[in-house]
Amino acid sequence: QQPVQSPQAVILREGEDAVINCSSSKALYSVHWYRQKHGEAPVFLMILLKGGEQKGHDKISASFNEKKQQSSLYLTASQLSYSGTYFCGTENTGNQFYFGTGTSLTVIP
Amino acid sequence: DAGVIQSPRHEVTEMGQEVTLRCKPISGHNSLFWYRQTMMRGLELLIYFNNNVPIDDSGMPEDRFSAKMPNASFSTLKIQPSEPRDSAVYFCASSPRLRSDTQYFGPGTRLTVL
Image (tube, rainbow over all chains, first blue to last red; front, side, top):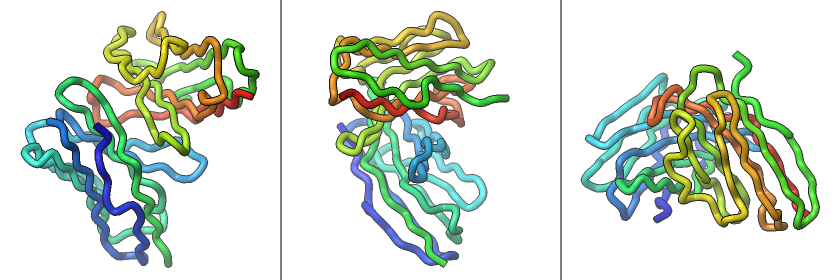
């Protein structure tokens, strides 16, 4: 039931782009994305609902492919502040909610 | 606004004791979520409420766990009796509405059960 995230870890230089993927074996109603810095609470980034959509704000955007039960988070022109662990959370059509294992993102100067 | 408020921030207790975690959501928010995070199990959604009504509690691990939301400004998560494996950081989050664009997390309660 737990969605699979890839990659598990990524290191970027400032200004580089990254893509984090999240896939589920179950039919999904929604996908949530969060970022968490060490020792802090998660920060909710965005939610994408069934129907397939793409959202974004600033240089972070995401897409949801309903047919493939996949979502991708796109980080463009990464900044040092983007470092942290990114989690996807998936809600299936049975209202069950599961988090992925996380992707550690490190942005270096 | 003060944001989501959780108390206590840290709790150390002995196995078998009752533990109550508290959460005050942001005023006007209709949805409230309880999460647990551990190194072994990662981040888990335990239960969520909408308009003070529990919507899904399938994430609550055992009958030892219970959650209530008696009114729109207060929620509790109770563990009775507590066990060492309950040690974790427990987060509460609130949202203007279910499946809203934004959930606001509280700072978390770090629970240690000896």
